Length: 377
Image (cartoon, rainbow, N blue to C red; front, side, top):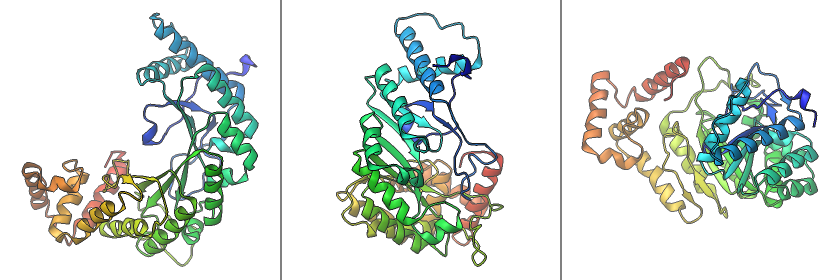
């Protein structure tokens, strides 16, 4: 190991919500594609591969600190911010039970398979008790890996891959510069599944706007039927109006979809799922319907009924839930029946003059303002 080249412990900016208790190990920096019009996380950031030796040094550093903390030693006199970051990461991970590790940043599968395998094997050596090692990956990167190498990666310990499917509409994929096609999504998903690795596919609700909502739902459901992932995770697109989402189209301009359209979009997608045996999650606070949560096919009818109940609500009721969910008063549709919370939301609507006729625009503008200010919504 070339210690003199080591630049210190690193962690990237994001991870899936489901990896909140995981140790974050940075394998690559930023995103190798970085052209998707809907994603601003890595814009103006240069992609690079971290040396394998540096990642292994990170693993060794975390191993050392967790061992020292377990033995009751005092906190080390860390000499640099990198050492401090490693110590606090180790302490936090130890408190969470040291059960899972997430490899960062946007696409760890872009590195050469033998390098990824070396990292995974070192994790197994240092932390044999770890139950899950996961990573983000792009479908295009996974599709290039041979079936044999994928199985070797699985054997080395990678047991879940998170892929941003977003949509399986070739029209939308091209207009948003995703750098992928429906066929590549399917090839990659099947490759992951064949290797025995758990697959989590992310669906971006609203990416088709009003005009392509139906196409997005139908094409995405068709791809998911062919892949049969272990998890389908919904995310809602929230985009600043100044961003041109359909950058590769001279004919279409993106038109954001109101909540009722999004509900109908999710409903259609779920209706079209056939033969899929997976867990459905809407596990992000920005999603309007976080209770879209269950196992297919067992819970399919319950999930459909939930969405249908929102769609069938009187407009005034829908507005109360839309605003109440965004303001933190409601989490589930059933919370509308909590008198105190309902009264608070109704009063907010009265004071602000929010009605079924203007609620969607009012909420859209509120979200725009919060995005400009960097606030949650």
